[in-house]
Length: 221
Image (tube, rainbow, N blue to C red):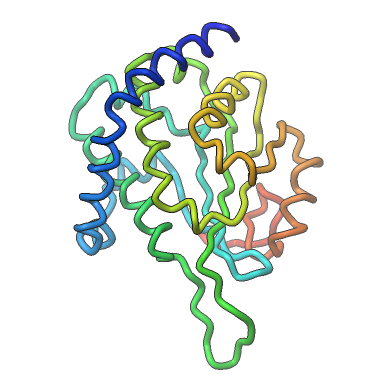
């Protein structure tokens, strides 16, 4: 849609003007890495904005799932209360964990192979709501959030984005604009699981994925 491109262009000017402050903010988080890594995410934030490690790929890289279709950030951003404070802190936590290889797979004495510091992203866009992108306040928030991922890009191996509906394609446009380095290594798929499940299983063992992603893992996420 033309309108979303115009909005992105306008917000690019706003965000680029404050880019230095965004970077400074993420650097300050690094100074307090231990505090961030030890922070316990409130249950209401966990349930509203699900992310988790589902397992490891064939190269022992951790696979991190973001059920982004469920991340309705607009209402939280516009309310501008404690939930937004906690959401931003959780996102700093996620980035710091990825940057510091927090999810690195530990191998015991009976296992062989190498442990990889890189990570894999699985972004699930199921149920994404276009209203997310009709709020300038929320768009600015998303762009600032995406900027933080520059800190951990060197550890990013590859990614999958699945369940991308016609509506969710608008989000992909935003993601492409502000996560350009990530999208190059990300395979984007529509809503047909018969297409994307075989692609996931080429790189990730079935026992490392839950059934909804074509796997056999019964671990509670």
